[in-house]
Amino acid sequence: ACEFKATGSEGNLYSIVGLASMSTGPSAEELKVQLVSEERFLEDRINHVERNFAALATDLGAVARKTARLRDKGDRLVKTLQDFASNESGGTKDSLEGMAECLSALENCQQLKIDRLETKVVKPLLEYEYVCKKAKEELRASHSVREKEVNKQRNLDRVRIRDPANRKRISQFESELQKVKIERMRSSRALEEYIEAFERKRTQDFKESFSEMILAQMAFHAKALELYTAAHQHLGVMSDEETVQLFLRGLHPRRQAAVEASLYPGPARGNSPVPTPTHSSHRQSSSQHATN
Image (cartoon, rainbow, N blue to C red; front, top):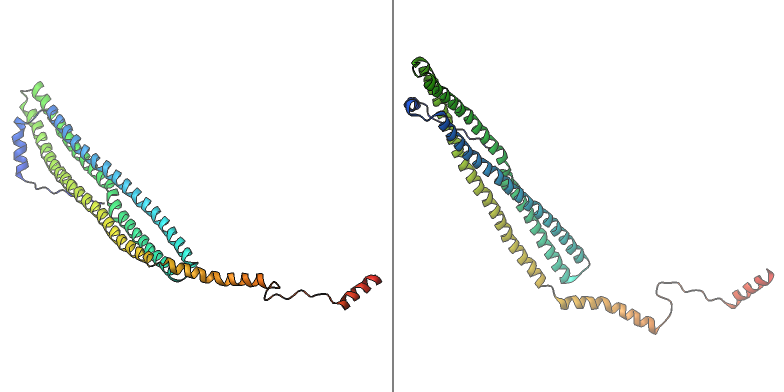
């Protein structure tokens, strides 16, 4: 969060200007109109910055969150490619694994871009909620001082109209008005410097934030081009002829076994043959059956 400290020189200039304005200064109503006009302009400016910076932070935060969801989907794609590669062999397996590595690196770059957006773009913009709140407090402080000047000027105008011969009272109100004018001039100068610093700071912060956003996108897309190029090269070396040969090599032993099974029917290898009953055993079983 940022705070702006206004500095102003104090001297006889304020007193001279204040004294000179006693006889030629505006009336209380004219001061009031001027006060309202200037404050409305400054308040509108602060509200403009607060509203738009908050909207920018919200939109950029949404971009970061959607990018995070896209990264998650990319991670799932990498996992699918890795599972696919585990059931392949030869150059096809190598190509799939190489593509998965490139896409995994791409998602890591995606995460770096998200972190950069959140810390260097969204966060500084969100801080303007406090910055604008502080600027409004400075405006209210200046308003109270200027209201005092309006009230003192109104009292002096009233005395001049109702009791113009009372020089002592008029001089007293003029003296009080002079002190308030000096205070108001100091406050106005401090507010002017504060708002000037506020305008300069918000312009610089806007430029820095969007510069970070653009550079983050440029860095990501430059790296993405490099990784996609490498992934495409892995895809290019994948040979359909090699894939077919590996498939046929795995298929032929099964085909040969099927041919042998059709030509020489019998028990499968590795299985114990079913015993064929003998005459003796048949007889034995017959006698046992007769006995029973």
